[in-house]
Image (cartoon, rainbow, N blue to C red):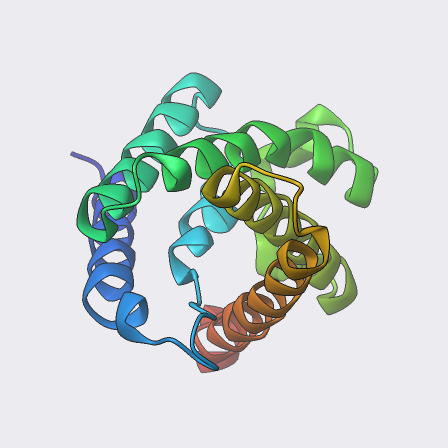
Length: 170
């Protein structure tokens, strides 16, 4: 087991436990629940096999579903953003495929990181809440929940990335 694989495993387990033991018990304003486990998808190395990444993202979402008793909607939303991550990065960063070998999310400007995290979080939460309600009956409430939960998750994700950025620690 390489050092990088060990670090990915530790990140997977830590974010999963943090999500299911702590963050799933936070219900800000009665329903807003931060989804910090999405950081695993944001930070996963690009040079790894894409099929493995999508499968690991599915497992992460499925584990969160298992502990949250949410019936697979986290897995579906997580697989969706895992699939969309690379095309979205190409769109935002305008880089060639060779540049992704050395890619590190926090080496980009804060505006690009914010845009990347915002877009993926809104896609995740939109799919999550649509699958949860499975109806357009109350579109206003659905949009309100997507926006508020996304804002809370985005702020928390950016804060964690800034606080634990290795370059700023050294």
